Image 1: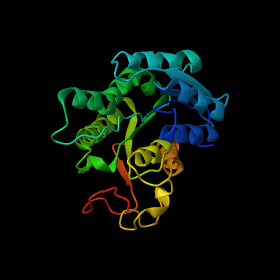
Image 2: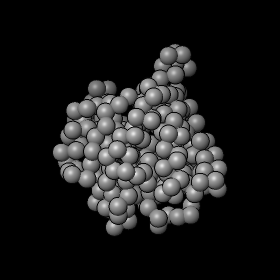
Image 3: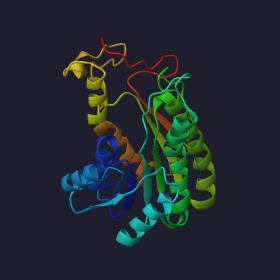
Length: 259
């Protein structure tokens, strides 16, 4: 049990990668506060995950959500050992369509909210010598043409990880690391592509130059890595960003087109 008796906050856990991380953490002995603005999805996650999960409905666009979330974890579990900043707005935008309001919303959820949550939990993470895992994206390195604001926000998150991974580790014993997933097949991603007009079996038609294995990454693969970085097995590593893609990211452009 890598996470025995650890209390974790996982944002964006109403489905997808967040739910998979929560499931993997509970299997390793953790108790988890599930956080999302999607109340229906949170209740479904709790139904699946069972008694070692509690839910907290909140909107990360509200800067006051961070102390509410931390206080919710403390009131239910009495401690805080780790935070997974997984919630994100995957909003399409280009240089022509990125409005000031859209940019602010994306950056506020994807970069500012993780900062505020770490800030709100700092005292308690220091007491437990806790671990923060930020879920980024390989788009942080370059991005796709229709994901301008999203890619910029993930670049900011990556810089924050490296900055805090150094400073918080030295001052408070808190480790901060980041996972940059490539193309992951979540229920949301599946539906996005269906809405784009792709056939129902589009995950079976992935070109090998996009996914050399012939299939997309699963949320469970990302979850297994998150467990490692939350656990003491990864101590004392901090400030590390790991790209979880099927090919070397640098030198390849992460286009997600399906033939």
